[in-house]
Length: 295
Image 1 (tube, rainbow, N blue to C red):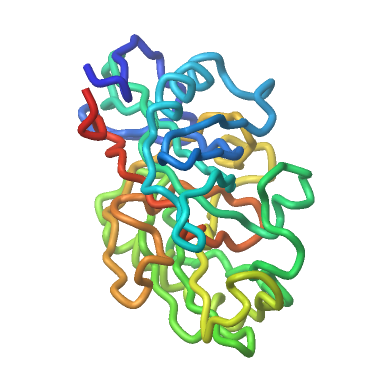
Image 2: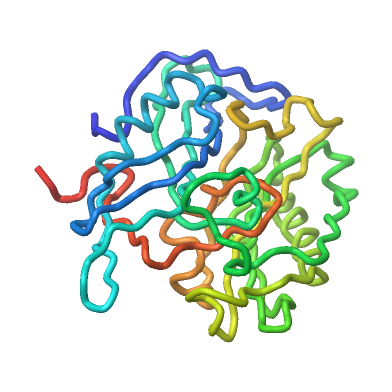
């Protein structure tokens, strides 16, 4: 057992997720906060947004995991500094249907900010004018084929934004399904295409100040959620609530470069109503499945 996962007995509640026995299922939630890194690249401290809403096991696994993260030192004018940024973690309980034993772990992590979090008054978030934000965002229509089949899911888009605030390139990095289907690849494609069509018409404001202002383009990540029923139903997203899903494969997006989701971290961002921008200064050396090479 690594320091980043523990075995436990779980009775997964998966409303609306009808699966055959043995199907891999993940119950997960995304938690947000901040992390402060010292000049050596070690975690000096962290915060969690609305800890009171988080289950005890989630707070415990974060406490066991985040302090052991190690980053590349953040350099300014040749000197390593202490720095803070936003943190977004996907906490997963993985099992198979019909089983009661699974693992809880921090499955993915992203470091950066979104324009929406600044309104929550979290420390270390994007100051005004330093991030990409929406001018116009018309949500996609629920694809009729998926609606008829009662298939829901979440699409994680990566968008390249030009200096005029238009989407110049777009791709779906991962699609997680809320429903078991005999044609998962088909419905992942259906949901991804609907999201990409909508995203092509979105308009953004771009950074006007700070270190990102001089760029000729920006890469942001945006989750798009499709669920059945009214807000408050089983698949609606609430902070601190478990959501059951079947994870999809992670696609490589070469044009996204270091500003896109790194490694397997495609679904570590929350649907907070604003695009997510990675903080390129924060490069995690730790592997989430194990250690950092330290003893």
